[in-house]
Length: 147
Image 1 (cartoon, rainbow, N blue to C red):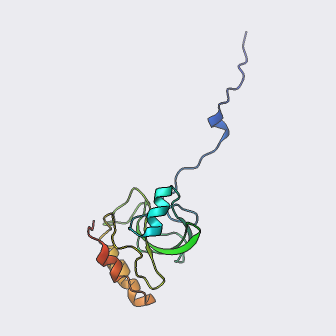
Image 2: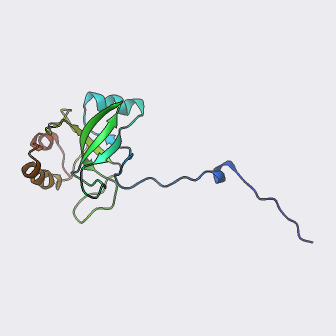
């Protein structure tokens, strides 16, 4: 004689969770790695900034791309200095999506960067200095450690 067992349902089976994104697109949470006041407050409160827009054609952010962030009810711009996605050769992969907050003209809001940034960021940002007119040399001067 066969017995019919009722379907076992636990609370975890009714919800669908997607894996964490390994690339920077809209609504991706980022980690502020400089010592700007607004960045420190947002990270301390446990409300990291979210990406609103990525300033490139593919709408997927990589190292050196400029992004628009929503942080503590304000819009700020930032430069991605570390991303979680798989990278090309000689570009390091990071554990989190790191961003440094900047002004409209490219000067950073903080005075120190807490994490090492990739060496290739120098060449990427120097190319963007010529094309867009923004000055990212101050951001490179703040970095104390390069990977």
